[in-house]
Length: 266
Image 1 (cartoon, rainbow, N blue to C red):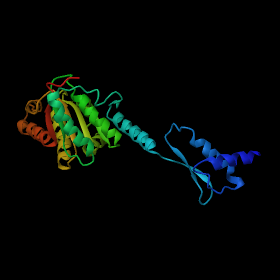
Image 2: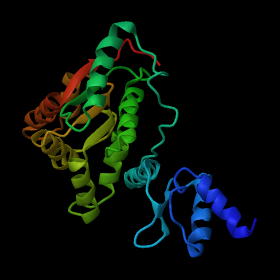
Image 3: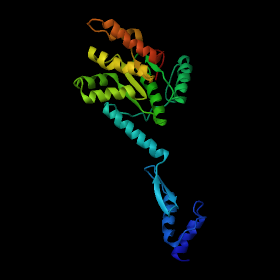
Image 4: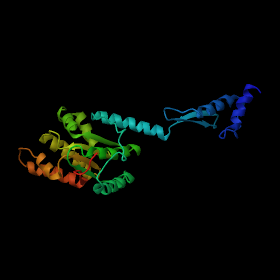
């Protein structure tokens, strides 16, 4: 058996190529294609054989490729907000929760995870430190990653700090604020722990919450404070401060369903 005949034998035994009419000039190309199919591509792309207008191979993206590209872009976006996006160890199975809360929380979680693109309302999770609030929001965020839906997950104290060091009307600040307004899902972790001023409250936070409320974009928040306590947190020694603080809290109330994590543990 000649070398060419050996190659043709391989081609004739492959389920995809056995019925193809391959001329001598294309035998090596088709044979190499068959061999490449057996190898795992670490980049997630897949080689396919085209027969028109002539025999040739092309690389096409796969679901794995699209997922890798999405996660890389998401990581880059979070680097912009100084947040290390690492949810590798996060899972619903590892989340320990009091049975009295479990049914309600998981019911709402399933509603959200099954309708991520149409969901309009998020969660406001309040309770003491180390009760699982942030972990639970990361479970939701991880589901968004699986479904390739963009989001930003940011610690409030870091967010306030970023806006403090940038001069007002700065283009970077405007771009960040606009992105937070428009991103499909937004997670604000540990609201109430930050040291904000009235400028941030009125020009950044109120603007952000008001936009997301008017445009029905989901918001998820964790806090050690209840909504009523946050009113005091947002007050400053200035005229009309009570009204401004209440406007913030009212928008959070309208954007979220509130849950107490006093009995939740992790």
